[in-house]
Length: 256
Image 1 (tube, rainbow, N blue to C red):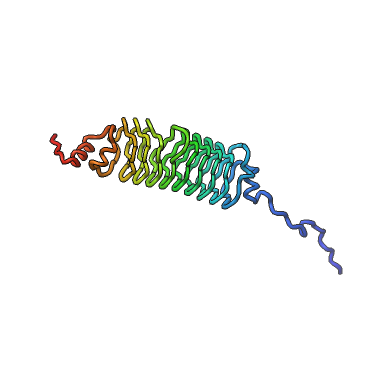
Image 2: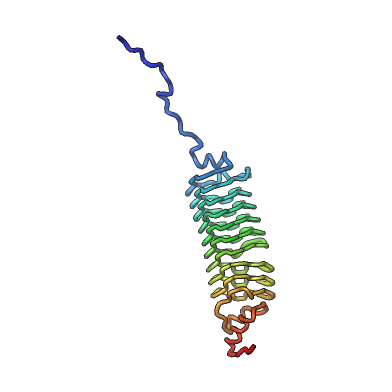
């Protein structure tokens, strides 16, 4: 008895083509909500060279990615990693970073107006020539960051670690700084006029030509006050205990 062969099914012989949406760069060019994608080392400029709808990235990796001149206005990065990524000249106006890391990233000449970074690792980042008007950094790790030479006024810093950072020539005039660690930072020529420093640490910072005229330092840790270091705070408002340290450095006894 001859068995009847099963009906021919073309799907038994065809190999399904790979889905084009499996390619991170294709997804980047076509989607606005992207999660858990790895763009490590990729040149993302072709997909981001013109303005599109704002994107949201969640847990994506941009390590050493090329984002020079990329259009990322209003983008949201949540728990993303962009170690050593190149954002030179990128448009990051009103962008938001929530957590994650962009350590060693290059933001030179980027447009970061109204940028918001919250609890982000920005250690050793470079911001020379970047537009940082009204940019806000809250709870960020900014050890070794180079903020010298940026453009725009209204930079907001709250509870950030700026130890050994370079802020040479920065204007923070009239700011209310809370919980900033400036330990061993280069604050040469920084404009602190009329600024309030609350729970901030200035120990061992370079204060060459720094202007503290009208600054309120009563809530700041000024480190060990000697005759030489006390002169650097000329024009500032200090507390009685801080004044007592200065008097002690001068060999004076204060009797209340």
